[in-house]
Amino acid sequence: MGRVFVAGSINMDVVATAERHPRIGETVAGQAVLYFPGGKGANQAVAAAKQGVPTTLIGRLGNDAFGQELRTFLGAQGVDVGFVKDTADVHSGTAIITIADADNTIVVVPGANARVDGDDVASPVLAKGDVAVSQFEIPLPTIAAFFARARAAGATTILNPAPAKQADKALLDLVDILILNETELGFLTGTELRDSDAPERFAEAARSLAQGKIVCVTLGKRGVLALVDGKPLQVAGRAVKAVDTTGAGDCFVGALASQLAGGKPLRDALAYANTAASICVQRMGAAPSMPTAKEVREVLGA
Ligand code: RIB
Image 1 (cartoon, rainbow, N blue to C red):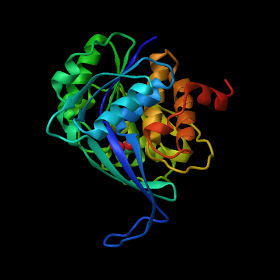
Image 2: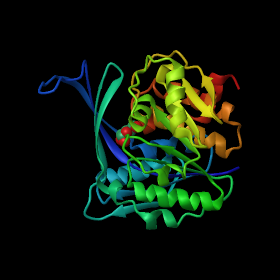
Image 3: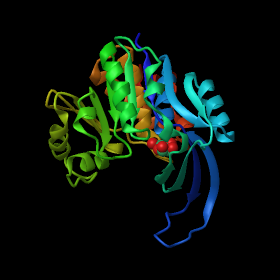
Image 4: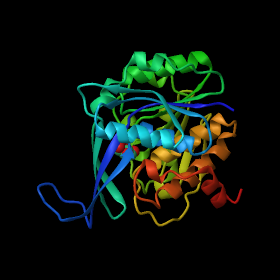
């Protein structure tokens, strides 16, 4: 079995729940304040580890109380945190999240995540069959260095370009599988896309990004559309009652990486990840809502 290596962000999510989101300049009364471990890198690592696949996280924490709490949490989920460094003079990554009606808005303050550098990704030794995963909450040159090493070792590289920002071709050329939602796809392709658009519109936009790689577009409750060798492959969404969609995309990425590391074919891995994400949205919080392999298999009837 291959292993999963995630180079990415680790945040404490400070969540306020309210009946509705405030408009600009408006104050609304909230219902609760909650603290959940999060960060796209940490969420994806937890999602992979909970599928029983050896998972290593490469990242940074501040030398503060959130940092200690996050390290303890990640270790307890089975994530190898041996390559997570404590960093002086900077706070741990923090996300301020508002949740109303199961939808969220997020402001991320990177803190220590902005310090993850080329040296950090130079130590772990990857091998053929491993899967290397990253997202856009750590510096882009660090991701490029990580993927170059992964490629040289014969590992598969997965990029989740979230939150969306422009990336140069040199970085995108190091990617085997690109996983993004319709907002990120619209941003990277300069296309106006809505979640109600027909699948062909997403496939058309994804085609312009593919250039030899697999592109997976996550479509929330509509499931996922992948473009493989130019051909669309669709997995239908599952109808569930969502309470919090925070981290659902990360759940998909981590679960997919775990299945590919375990040697599963792409179609099966997509269906598995889609099911995992549908479980995640039924729980509050990002990292704590990642399902176990047993929970996913029960839903799949496998
Ligand atoms: O993708 C969800 C994550 O985005 C949250 O956990 C938050 O920390 C931000 O990084």
